[in-house]
Image (tube, rainbow, N blue to C red; front, side, top):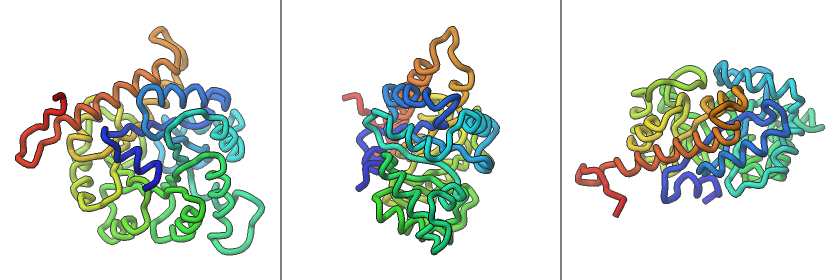
Length: 287
């Protein structure tokens, strides 16, 4: 069992917050990551900036543009990761072209083209990859490189993912499966989509842990998601918004990141307490 899988499938439901590395400047990322860990994050997802982030909504797209403007290249991203001092697994979310173009190897098989990126990620301290624009049908070369360097490959399951693709993902996924709570791109929402419950039901027999994201922003969202059967909650835009707002009367960016992480983690724990036992009654975990 990998470090990510252990963190997601631990005794308590997990929190997986996201921030874009290098936003608003590379020097700020370490403080923000430390704040998220202090707030209860079990795994932290770091966005590697890419110029065409098709899976992300305006909030994260803007963060990516700020990070790119601040000089956050793939190599700068890895340097940021190497400078972090947190005791939680780190996941890199980025897009396939950055992996394929990384390094000096411009010929050869897809595996040979992808291998330098995965090797560098592992050396820097990355434990897992999320590549939202990589079709599962084309993922075997990356899966091979990840296996070589001990890096998890995490797939995103959308409400529209077919049973055929689900079967292929189940064979290739590791760490956890990222359950997309709704259609569309990332972004904070006011409620939890009904698709969350349906998607979790489709994955009920999977042995890998399940974490639900896309639109999570409030304690009640985390509670409902975990009560529905998720092992963890992924939240991104709500944290990126805090970074974009900067220091405020309510506290510094780091203070507010820590507070929001603690809020969502508490909601996830509330959801675990609300899960029914085999008889259908809520479980009292306070005794």
